[in-house]
Amino acid sequence: MTFRLRQIQTTAAGREIVRERTVDGERLTIGRSAENDVAIPDLAVEQHHVIVTAQGRSLTFEAAGTLGFTLDGRKRTAETIDDGGAELILGSYRIDFAAGPDGEFEVTVRSQEERESGEGLGTHGFRLANTWLPSKRPVAWTLLIAIFLAFLVVPIWSHINREPVKPDYRKPGQVAMDASWSTGKLSLAHRGLEDNCEACHAKPFVAVRDDTCLTCHEKIGDHSAKPRLTLARGPLSWGDQVQRDIADVFHKPGAGACTDCHTEHEGEGRMEPPAQKFCADCHGTMDKRIKTPLGNAHDFGKGHPQFQAAVLTVPGAEKATRLSLDTKPKEFNGLKFPHAMHLSKGGGVAQMARRLGAGKGYGAPLECADCHTPTSDGVRFREIDMETSCGTCHSLVFDKVGGTFRTLRHGDIDQMRADLAAADRVPRRPIASGRKRPGEFAPGGLYYGNFAPPQASSVPLASRVLSTRGVCTECHFPSGSGVMEVVQPKRYIANGWFDHEPHKREKCTTCHAAPTSSSATDVLLPGIKTCRTCHLGEDAAKPKVPSSCAMCHSYHPRGELAPVRVGKDAADRKTKT
Image (cartoon, rainbow, N blue to C red):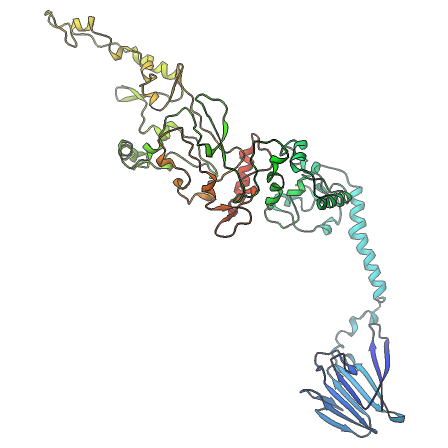
């Protein structure tokens, strides 16, 4: 017995492809599995669905699984056909059986989806073969050429022939169809250039260069002198050198380029700060390559030196010196102010605050917030003002005229001397003569007025208030004809940044040991151990706060405008701190 198989497939153009082969034997297996004699690629067909057995001119059909089959229009699980002709339906396929000469059976397999099931009738008119359009291949080549012209030739041609202008947020770009090359949205900082690609990509097929960035960011400074930066980086490893050589082929800038840290087209949110490794590559072992006063640092939690505060180390110093907090530095800022006495819950200061402070809004023992007022952005604190913070208790009233009190002008020594000299010119009360009795030496008597020793009132008031026991030297150190200038540092940590706003829920005393400080020379800054109770390195796990280098440090020199720039950066970091 022989089964001659003819499998017919129809192409999209309507052309039929016929594949023929023979199967020797009395059995023919049909199913979805490829090991069957007739494999039907239809999920409605079981792996082994039907077994056909030939005996003479008879064919016996048996279901191999649980599903039946449709034979000559009727659902069956087993059936015998005597004349050798039958039509078997399995899923979307039709299999025709016909008896031939010499014990052969001709088996024709074809999809009936379009011809009999009707499912293809709705889409028949959408085939290219049934429209006026050419076949797939010409259409594909036409579309490919159109895409090539629209998205490659047109952008390059318009880029080459554009007029070079300085990047402007208010003007769209001159290059046509270049938006199709974008790999993603720009960050918030550069979203105004979304339609002006050539503002950054000045040359075709050349990576963004530092000169292009400096067109807008011209005031930003280098981290250090370029020769020193090269020494700090050290030689590249073999693998890094290979990557560097490949990058040079594609015109990518060298090490230290702006794009090493600042990457774009990664979403329209805030630009992510550089990863910790960009800093640690140099600062982790920098002392081995260059001479530097900076300690090695590669991770805030595992490898970071103690903070160095900029303090005035001697009275009258004009320049601050950076000292490690481990050395317990002393600061001479020209002021006598023991925090412990002023923050005490008992004693004279607390009692005076209760009596006099009610009108000023505190009316209780002093707290940090009574004197230290945060700036509008919450990053730092305003300078202490004598009249606002100290004047309630430390009055500068020196005279009373009628019902009006005369007050010295704080901070102006010359004006103070003039005011006190004017007070000295007030005529003295006449001395009473009294009765002239020998030996009379009573206050107010003539003899007393002529021969008694000079009284305090005869010493100029200005000299008295500036003396070592005068009212001014209660808080200030005498110096020359006046007092030593008071210096209130705006920032103690010159190379780092701290934002108080995200930490406002913490108590001041958590970080600053003011209640136990009995001397104004104490530097009340927390050490790195205090910060590490919450903050660790970039890879820290909860509940610790992951803190990369960029959280507290800025790569570029800050200069005079640094607080403005870094303050804005701090505002952007609030949600991440």
